[in-house]
Image (cartoon, rainbow, N blue to C red; front, side, top):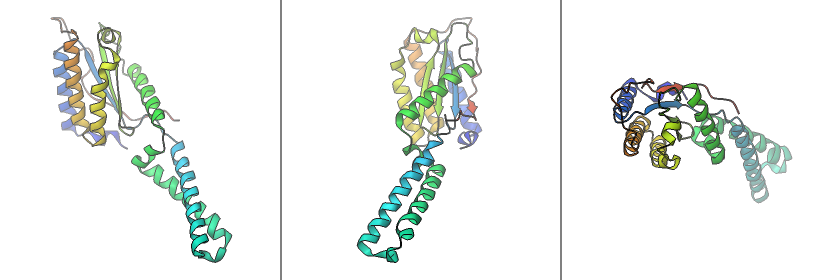
Length: 222
């Protein structure tokens, strides 16, 4: 998945405008980082291969037992279907993202995305604000998952559980392909929440972190 193809220039400008508007309401600095995937998940195709091998072998065995196909040749009823199933299973899981996700445990997806979000917080220096008021909105498209991480100045006012509604709506929109619209709504919701929690702007506030959407291309390997 090419992360840059997921957003048009017009969509990026709309998201950046939403960040600017939300930041005008408080002294928070909202940073958006998007990545195609938080990990390579190299084990998923091999699990697909194992599933395909077993499924094809069972199907061939049942067909041979009840239908007498292939004249009882062992290599036709056992070895060939197993190999074909393994190859097909590996290929399909490797090439089809929706199928690949099904061969990865949900807790593994959660763990890898949270780990990548924590790394992005440091890589993009979300901590580099006067009042430690940075907020990272991280989304990983392959996993259909998002994470919100606040710096210490944010966490003192907003509990981590309060970001759940923002994350849930953004994940839902990722699943339906409305990524840019989901980001705009998420940024607006972040701005409203921060405003309610009293993180009001000050006369000497300035834009400390760029409002552009950061697109991460690389992911750590499994």
